[in-house]
Image (cartoon, rainbow, N blue to C red):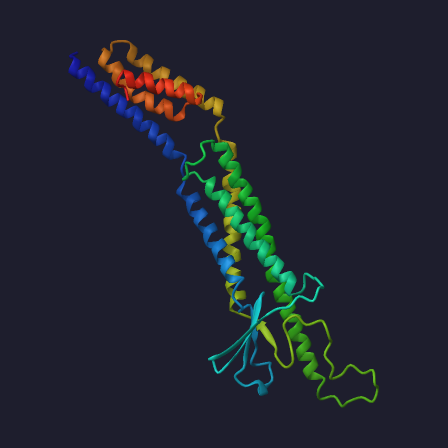
Length: 313
């Protein structure tokens, strides 16, 4: 066999081994997990934006007094706004009276902040632990980061659904109380000085005031699909984390497998190969070895220097 034929076959085999190595690397990447990270980002952004807008509860015109006319009231977790004629807006922040309760504006504020915060931390961990990002080299560490992100997302989603449940419960209870109060107006005024008819219960209302009756607003109904997407993202993060932790190779074993692979390739070329074939082989193997080597930085620099002196790389 001529040297040209041997050289050509050597190049074909080397190219094939390089292609197999790249294919092995690509097999570890899943576009599905990358898409799940995108879902997590959308959920985190949606939560952060949604809790700011004051459209969580709004006036119910069918149940409110007709004297209110075109007055509309919107309330959120931070501000309450009144509009008239769609051009006049008046907004005010809530004031804290010093008494904390989960079934209050302060409780809703706490749940909203915690849910959005945990989702953002979760997404950050899952992003840096993603397979598509090569900032970290240790695959097992990245897998644990994704799993930790999934657990933090679980905590955030619990607070999110708790917030939605509290808001729905508060609005429904106050709406029923307002309906009951209206039903008592037709009852004649009793002579007992301690009667409760025509009197509103003080200190119990979170949203309702005067003749306004409130229903869940636009933000409430947008929060439902966001919560569903965030829940799906959380489940997939946990599945991805567990799967990758189980499948993550041990770093020492990676080094042993890589050395064994290189030695096997070298052995296959040792017999019947020309010096130029071996040189081409080492040119192909050296960058792969350096990329995955577990040697110290000084050892790697020495290997690079030796390869450069022999014009291998």
